[in-house]
Length: 203
Length: 210
Image (tube, rainbow over all chains, first blue to last red; front, side):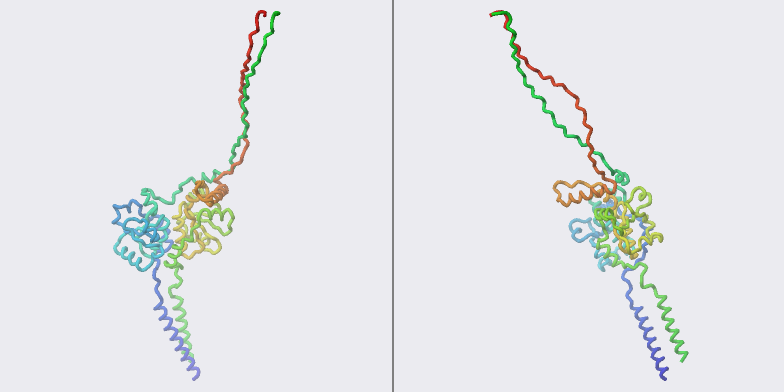
């Protein structure tokens, strides 16, 4: 009888455990954001991704894009691209911003991210793209290039001849002139020589 | 009795098997988007050219430079001691050992910092640690360390100290040259004979007699 009780208890314990496990799995939190593109996929995608140049975002074309400024609110206040929306990096995944981003995605609008420099927008953009906002692009050259209004805002080109400059070093001989004392021009003292002619003859 | 035990054993085994086939709770990308965003925001991945120059000159043993440009550019010029992992091969298995480790500080660099930043964020996602980005890239490195600009007279002393450091670093990295004074050959001066007019006052000889 003892053994029967024991086995009964064990059975109940196992059953309870199984139920708890199943319940736990069911109410486990689903992660808020999921990567829909993996890192290796991004590597191959980045090779040929066309981003947006400042002239595209210029006054005339502004209606085609939704421009998002990822800088701090202070920088945004000082100056920003016309009609840009401010979503500082720190708050990029906040509910409010995510709601807006989802709205833009559903409306099939192209979202252009920009930071002070092109680099500042890179990581936020990669992150957004990977969690599913594939309608996003980066403003090439960043805000700095937009302000300068140059058509060529290509980054990652070597601006200097690296190899040449790096081989210029060494020992340079510098000639040092011996300080030569200036000779004072000899002062000309006219010497008046009084020549008394020999008195000839006699007095 | 035995039957019950067998049934219990089967139930346990069933649970165990079920747990095994659960979707991995440790995601393939161990860093969640929210955590990644915090890392992005914190900005402490950047190392500027002066800091890097100092570490290279001091011979920091854990410094590990990774040039993410393509091979042609790497062959033309790269930072001393850097290895080349072209960006499109970044996540290949061959390089995984170099990137996913706990000993070295990996500094990604490229011509600017856009490519290096891309490399950083993708590796960071995969949970790699000790990753840094050279702020400004090689372009900025050349504008500050290799060819430092003399600060204006109105700038504070620190600017001049920094300039002195950069000048020294420039020599170390092969761009600056050390000036060695060499006495110049004394040029033979053409002798110009100065004629000294000596005025002689000649009194005419008294002629005749008294």
